[in-house]
Amino acid sequence: MDDFQRQQSNINFWQGEAFSKSNELINKTQDAHDARMGQIDAEKKAKAAIDEAKQYESETDYLLHLGTKLADKLETVQKQLEQSKEEIQLYKDLLSKPFAEIAAYHKGFNATYESQKELLAGWIVSQKAFRELSMNFGEEMGKTQEDITELAKISKLNVLENNTKYGNDAKDIEFVLPYVDSIKAKMQQ
Image 1 (spheres, rainbow, N blue to C red):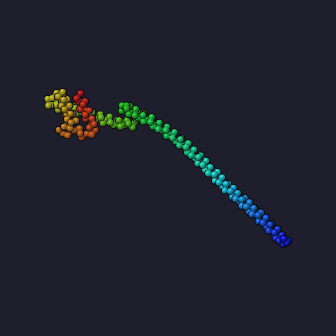
Image 2 (cartoon, one colour):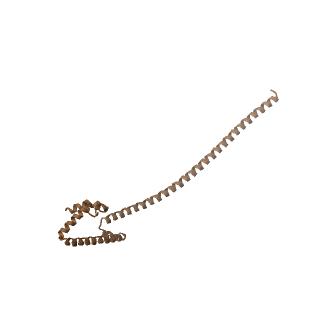
Image 3 (cartoon, rainbow, N blue to C red):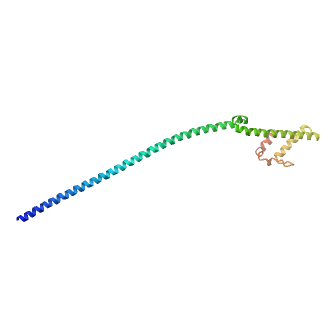
């Protein structure tokens, strides 16, 4: 082998070595670059996970706060419900008492109660006046008080059975209809 060929062989050898080293450096640089990119990607993922965790923590705090507020509201509503139940029971108990006791407790009811008592008092006076008038007419016809009382019972039964001469039938008075049978039963006692 001559010098030129040796030199050429040496050059080829060193070129091969340089090329090999160059490829190694390129591979190491690529590996370093890939590692750095992986590190950056991992850092991004870690930051995203931290941000997500902070968001969850914030939402959890909000939900806990909301849950506390709801629990407080529920407790308030339960107390109000209990008070309402007690008030309902008070009114139920009150409604089972005589009207005079209800009127003494509730002033609004008292006005209505007094108005109805006045209406009832007027009705009673009218009934007494008609009774007096009936007794006067009965005496003028020669009837005794017992006769007149018996005629009044017959007239009352005619009203209840819708069999009156002048249209004074019970069927025309809705308020009376539910009590027709019980009134008849009491008359027979």
